[in-house]
Image (cartoon, rainbow, N blue to C red; front, side, top):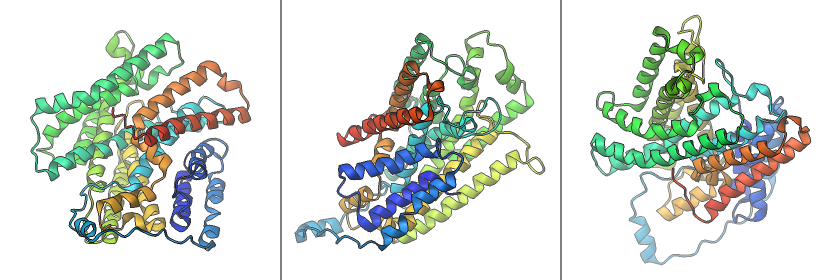
Length: 463
C-alpha cells in the first residue's frame, strides 16, 4: 500500500517536474517542502493514523490540476565555449553518482524516526505504533532497524570506491584501527546519553536495551565487527549471505540453548546481565547492517546499460527480485504451517526481525525508486557532464530530505536532546490534542531548521 511519505514525494515530484516549483528554492518553496515531507508524516502518525487513505487522497488530489496548468518556459542555458564543451564530453561519468531516490528514502526514514520519538509521549500517538515489549511489530520497532539498515547502505560506498581503485582488502589490524575512528564518537555519545538519562532520572524502558546500553552503543560497536566480518567475505562472497548465516546462527543459539530465557527473564545481578538485551540483540543488528551493505552495493553504482533508461530498468528488476527474496525468507521464518513458526522480536533482534527489516527497507527503497522513475523521468537520464548530473540531482531531490540525509545521526542526536527537553518541561500525557500538535509542529520545525541550516552552510558532521 502507498505510504503517506511516498504520496507526499509524488506530489513534490509533480510540482517540480511540471512547474519547477522548488527551483529557485524560495521561502515559499521551503515552506511547501516542509509541509509535504515533514508535516505529512507527522499527520500520518497522529491525526490521520486511523485513516491513512484519506490523507493519501488529499496529498494526491492536486496532481491532476498541476498537470493541466501551463508549464513555465525552461530557463535559458548559457552557451559554453567550445573548449569547455569538448572538455565535458571527454569527462568520465562518475561511477558512484548521487541518487535522488536513495536520498529520499533515507531522509524520509530519519524524519519519521525523529518525529516518532517525541510523538510517542503524547496521547495523540496511537499505542499500536509504540514499541512492543517482547513479541510483535509496530511503527517504532521498524525505526531502529531501518536506521541500521540505511547505515549499511551508505557503508557500501567506501567498499565500492576501493573496488574501483583496485585496492585489496587491508589487513585486519588496519581495518580495526580505521573502524575505531567511526566507533569512538558514537561510544562517547552513548556515554553522554547514559549519564544524562541517569543524572536527570529520565524515564526509560530497561527491556529495550538494558540498564546502561543504548542505541548509540549499538551503532558504535558495528564498525569493528563489520571489519571482522570482512575477513569472512573470502569464504562467503556475499554480505547478504553473511547476514543470513549470522541470523540463522543467532536464532539457533536462541532456540537450542537457554539464551532466549536468559534475555527475556534472567536476573540482573551484574553489568553483563543488566545489559543483556543490548549485548545479544547486537548480533541481529549486525546482520541487518550487512544486509544493508548488500543493497548498497547494488543501488549506489551507476548501473548497467548504455542509457539511463536501461540502467534504471535493470536496477528496478534487481531491486524487485531482492525485495521478493527477503519477503519469502521472512514468510518462511514466521509461517506456522510451512515455515519455522517464529515470532518477530525487536527485543531479541531475532531472525524474523532481521528478515522483516530487510524486506521492509528493500521494498521501501524499490518503491521510492519506482516513484522517481514514473514522476521524475529526468532524474535517471544520463548527463553530458558531472556538473549537469549534479544539477539534475539537486533538481530531483527535496532540500529538506537532503538535509536530513546529509547529517542523519547528528540530527537524530538533536532530536533526542529536544525530546528530553520537552518531556522535562511539558506534562505530555495531560495536554490536549491541539496542544500536542502545536508542540510537535514546533519541534519538527526546529529539527528541520537545524538540518537545513547545517546543509545551507555546507556542514557535514560525520559520526
